[in-house]
Image (cartoon, rainbow, N blue to C red; front, top):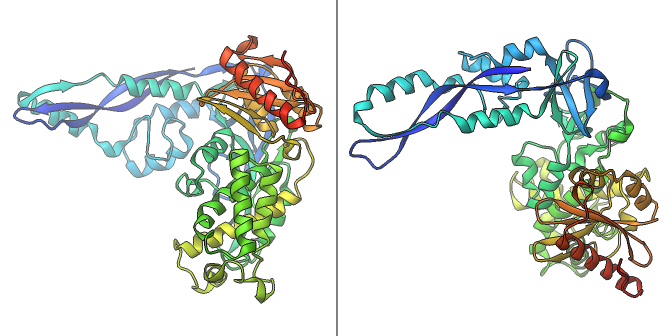
Length: 497
């Protein structure tokens, strides 16, 4: 499907007797190709219908549930029929307010302000006429024809499919999420995938979730755990807000391909809670009482040992922090004995005890996050989506820019297999049962190789690189180095292939 899309791009110029570049917006045309895929090459993974009004892109389509299909190992969400899509993206638009509303449905114009196509508020005609009229006063004009913007449009089109007269956009895995809205706890749908998880580990900053307008993992649940999400909704409002008047389930889901839902939600909740707690509790370590200080040290050591990833030690450390805080219904003596005035200020925050944005509020949120994540960690189902309790210590080995780390979630195994071009589901299943260890090699940006190792001796049994080729020397070396560390931890001699 070929599209002709009006775009706006920026040109720069220098006026005579001026060293400061100025810019203006010009009109251009971008051509994009959307791949057309036969219907028999895709399978429907989910049918979703979110009616909360808080989850753009997951509501019904044309009065029926929205399809999320699987093709090439990637999930794709249904947008609209081809005729409506073509009319939308090829429309120039003249009314800024009306155009702002349709951006939510236009993949070329996302609602984050970084529109790839038409933005009527830029008023290109005025800019262009002004620039051309003053051409006599311009000594340098830089106009590349908008080639950069046009390349961006095609890259965005590469993330779309046309199937059976409908247009689909690449998406992340759907999941349940819980939040307060107008005094009630709303259970609705959201999207979560490897990119957000990688960003959490990279930034190691809980504020990421606020600025990226995404919910923290503590409030996210696997798509098959609707009842757990409802239970979480009933427990909301313990301290941060008045308790919800009622719980509203604002979405319906039908799962047709359970194997495509691999979100390790409880692991992500532990990771987010651990980082949030450490960032606000580290400054209390010198003055904390003995028990609280030991809990903070255990949290720090678990984060260091696992690189911030959810391990059994990290789960225990977060649970240790959570023991020092209880909900409002707990006994008065458990309020502020451990963390002093800050914890007490958090406890009374709902009635004005701590100002929003203050350190007391951040500390309170961190403690509550640990409490919620700890309960989830202890109740996590043994369904093979994560096997943190079987992970070895240490979890990773680094040498320069190269790193080897053990894979302990099915989501990571799928991401690893996708980058290497190999299916590792059987290896992941064996790892979840403790029959082998799945190890990945990284170059700091992406996966470069994988290996399976004996769980008892650490001996490498098989290695695989990209596209079925053997891994590079660097990847092989770091994998063997990590296997040697595992062998030493097990008390076995070093084994090589």
